[in-house]
Amino acid sequence: MASYDVIVIGSGPGGYVAAIRCAQLGLKTACVEGRETLGGTCLNIGCIPSKALLHATHQLHEAEHNFAKMGLKGKSPSVDWKQMLSYKDEVIGQNTKGIEFLFKKNKIDWLKGWGSIPEAGKVKVGDEVHDAKNIIIASGSEPSSLPGVEIDEKVVVTSTGALELGKIPKKMVVIGAGVIGLEMGSVYARLGAEVTVVEFLDTITPTMDGEVQKSFQKLLQKQGLKFILGAAVQGVEVSRSKAKVTYKLRKDDSEETLDADTVLVSTGRKPFTDGLGLDALGIEMTDRGQIRTDDRWQTNVKGIYAIGDAIEGPMLAHKAEDEGMAAAEVIAGKHGHVNYGVIPSVIYTHPEVASVGQTEEELKKADRAYKVGKFSFMGNGRAKANFAADGFVKILADKETDRILGAHIIGPMAGDLIHEICVAMEFGAAAEDLAMTCHAHPTYSEAVREAALACGDGPIHR
Image 1: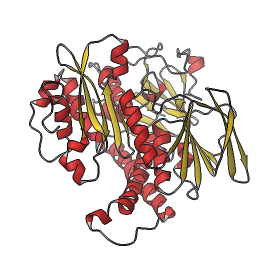
Image 2: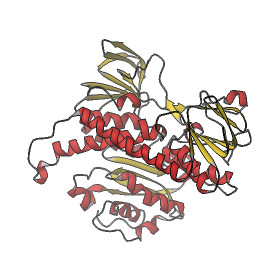
Image 3: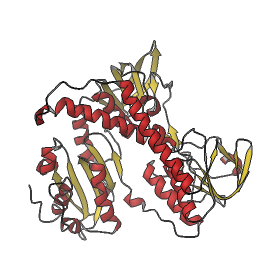
Image 4: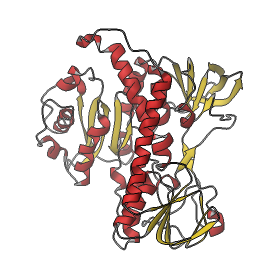
């Protein structure tokens, strides 16, 4: 048993970043983690392994569709699925070992086991109870399912099972057209699976800008993904390693079925707070099962803080990281800050999709006068040379002040390009500021400048 200034529960992106920042600020820090490796869902069974498979399968797509056009002739590569999974596991290992190294470097104690909070100022791990002046709950989230859908992680899987299937399915049904479903659906479509996405709403990726939604769906359909929208899944029946998905179309209540080798349930995630003892502590929760915090990330129990997927807001690793750093600053007596208006979101399909700030639909609802600057990657020389000219950059700016209110990109490297606009928004920049900034040629980023120019007199290359 030991006494600490801060004990962080959970070592995902929010937790490990909070622990490192606390240590940097001179606080004696420990982090509780029950997994065999650090990094939480993101590094072990989420963001990192899924990006490894997306990268590998994109290379396969390039070899099958674009190599010959560039004079790279030869047989298309065959897929060694076991080797691809091994590569994915190596990537996980490199990243989780990296966190372990950072803990040692910053003198953070890893308390191995699952944690609970028997009372304020105490954290129990296994049979040991440790003292903590402050506790940060960074316990993350877990997949949520639907009534009538029993997950076995073999035939009916969450993202966890989808990252380690024994073989590539011939037919895959994806329930839910959100980020996880579309990313993993893309992976298996590139590997030759017939992928059908069933979505309850009438659009994919519900919070996205409407114009991007439509373009994104068309591009995914061109890649072979099929969509059944406005469909409520009634249940999944598993028999002899096969599944039958029953859904009802909302427009006319007609019932249909789909056969599948694998069913991926990607209907969102919910906070993971089981076993922490929050009820006994009297910690206030929201109606959606999230931990309620104030503007300093503190719960209603003094000295207990919460961040990341366990509290309100978008379930994004980088949002958790920002909150982890901010909570650490607050505990150290400094001023922690998170600008929730400038948190980007990215979908790592090909093309990538990225957004920050407000959508057109949100601006219309708020009755905000705005203007739109748009530029297609078809007008970008680098994108055309790289067979990556699908998509566009769209910047939304205040009609009077020209201040950037939001941006939405579908195209090559969108997840990296969006940060130019994030930095601009953080400084309260106008679209003209971006337009007047010299951009290297030839780069994808020139499309961002052209979209900014389109908020004024117009782009050059259109």
